[in-house]
Amino acid sequence: MTAPEIQQEIERTRERLGETVDELTAKADVKARTQAKAAEMKARTQAKAAEMKVKAQGKATEVKVKATQVSGQLRQNETVQRRWPLAAAAAGAVIIASIVVWRRRKT
Image (cartoon, rainbow, N blue to C red; front, side):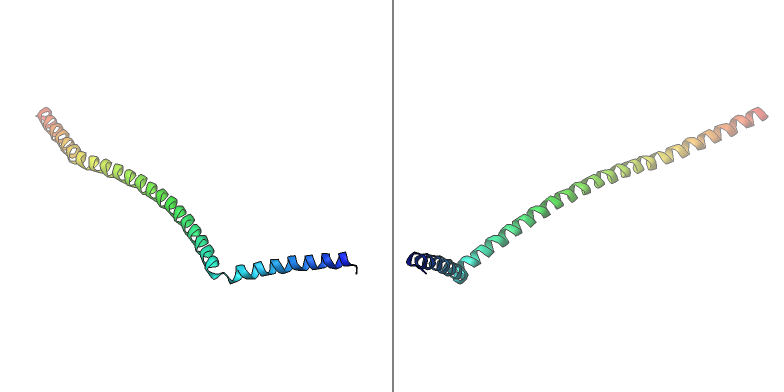
């Protein structure tokens, strides 16, 4: 090997050694790793919370629609229940009037 080749080999070795030292430093920096992990967990938690909020809003809308439908049905049932005695009384009056008219014609 010539002197320039040896010099290049030394430079490559220094670069690899520098990269290795940087990697080891990063692994040894527990505080930085912990902060990075905490930031990642926070981001995931916020994303999940946003997703759940959207789902909750959708369910709330469904419940409101169902409540409106049920309320409408209840009002309709109340109206029918209120009219039922009136219809029965009217039918009874028609029957009584028919009997009275029929008896008058018979005599």
